[in-house]
Length: 70
Image (cartoon, rainbow, N blue to C red; front, top):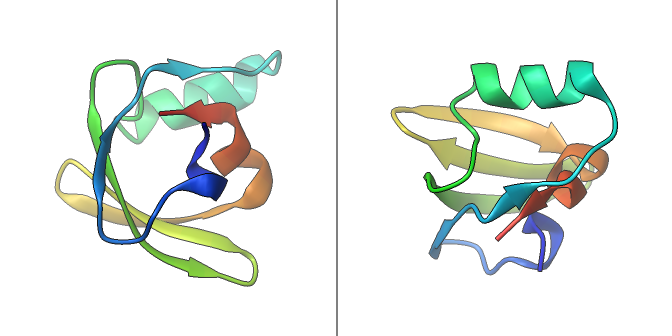
């Protein structure tokens, strides 16, 4: 299951980041998005979703959300 399928308001644990793009992987890591970290989908929007990771809120597109396995 990835973040596009997540229920808004529920906390999940990131199982894996599935991407062949090193830049995308590095970007997600810089946000604090890596295996074992809790992540919450705050809301789904047309362009993607709003997530809460650690102490920050970020808007990510569908491509990034699909790469985050929960």
